[in-house]
Amino acid sequence: AQHARTFLAEKGFDQLAAEQFGVGFAPDSYDALSKHLTQKGYTIPELVAAGVVDQGDRGVYDRFRHRVIWPIRDVTGQTIGFGARRLSEDDKGPKYLNTPETPVYHKSRVLYGLDLAKRAIAKKRQVVIVEGYTDVMACHLAGIDTAVATCGTAFGADHIPVIRRVLGDSDGALDEGRGEVVFTFDPDEAGQKAATKAFAEQSKFAAQTFVAVPPEGLDPNDVRLQRGDEALRAVIETKRPMYEFMIKRVLDGTDLNTVEGRARALRAALSVVHTIRDSIVRQGYVRELAGWLGMD
Image 1 (cartoon, rainbow, N blue to C red):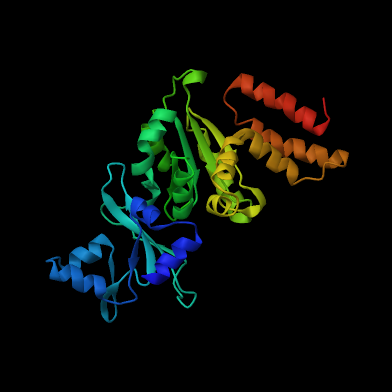
Image 2 (cartoon, helix red, strand yellow):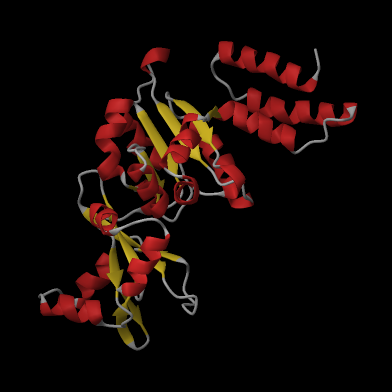
């Protein structure tokens, strides 16, 4: 497993970190796991149902081969699936490969790291949503122990009830009792798409929603690796309200040097402002938007 240890070391993770998150390794073999588990008394249909082997024309073969493995656990700590990253550029499979949908693993309802973060989320009334397994590890090791990640899918409606339960997010909470949901998005195109999708769902939270964007196209793990724990904590601390982030994103994509451009920006930004349910907050953003555009 030296390849896996080298990969983790290059990402800034030592043996203690690997043990803390249960990170493992799948050997470069077509049947090492299936042989091992059938010797333990499991049947091939059980292994297929669990998603650890696949069925092909030539029989069954291990799903995960020559990859770093993360166990994906439910909120109680039970392992229900795995995430795996390839270690070789010769590997023609996807960079990340997850357990397929099984009777117990439904990726649209699972958040990696929730078993480790649940107590901190409930206590601090905050959840930080990042994009990958190494980002969760980096956040926790930097002291951001409320971090979780989606598993091979964008943040969606099915994740919301899971978070709301752990966060204690109730519709009747007063402002001072409302929690925080902090999304982190890469500034690239995929990150912007993820932001748009998250924005479409964010109104389903009673909690306040924020966006934290790492600098210069770095992901949270890169920030920790290149700039240290304090810099990563600063990224989360300098979060911006989701509404402000989305309005500014609309304005950034428009030429504000002409009257026509500002008019287009206003029309586009109003579609964001219109979604704000709280009338006081909505009026505040109307005034902010007018100031940003130099309009009445």
